[in-house]
Image (cartoon, rainbow, N blue to C red):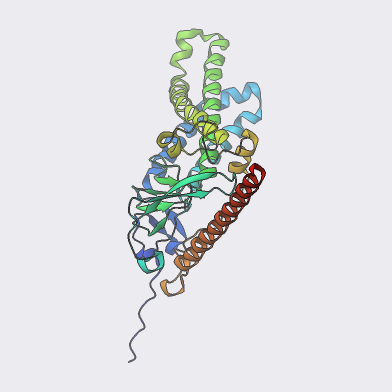
Length: 328
């Protein structure tokens, strides 16, 4: 009988990073995807208690919208949690030494122009991946991959946060803050209703054990994710990442990525188009051209930067000649 042809090898099967892949490479998660399910449980379990034992009494007094929000808000939070955890954060391809230029540039840096601001930013050579990292990219030590617009590695989602899932992360954190505030308020209203029914504070507290528990969990959650929301609101308004904030501590004027306007900084994060993945993990190895495409993109950017530098140098030379002529 004829020998069976070997099964195809897919990119995710040979990928040297620490990511976890599902659906034959179509879904990308961090090294610990279980963390996302644990966080989902931290949201879901108190939400179930809130819906079953807390919300009905409050709904009876304040209307059906309490029940609707109580049911939909945690679903919304968990949805964006999973969108964050199971989205490619912006993993960049790895280049072979022949493609990258051969010799090692370990420890070297160079200045490049930021497209959105026209200002210079310093980028570092990534010896593992074989190229100078694009502006704002950083090699994540947890996933062992270079991530475009790296922000941080989040233990609560089990994923690295980067260009392609940062907006989902912001939505998850913000919605969780709002839901925690809602659960805190409705739990307090539940206790107030027990007292208002004339049972006395002591008896009301005895009959509101679940509401008190949910209230304490929600207060703790609100304090945590609320502080996180405020911190990321600051980062968005100043156009910084978490990594940049702790490593570089840019001032408003020194930040090369700052557009000079809080509004434009927010638009850049919330409204900019999210690019497609740079690596096709679900493609067959022989069909994947991610590295070659990325190498061409790097060569194009380098050529554009070199041409821009020549134009600037020529303009400076002409200005010098004009100033010399005026002096003479």
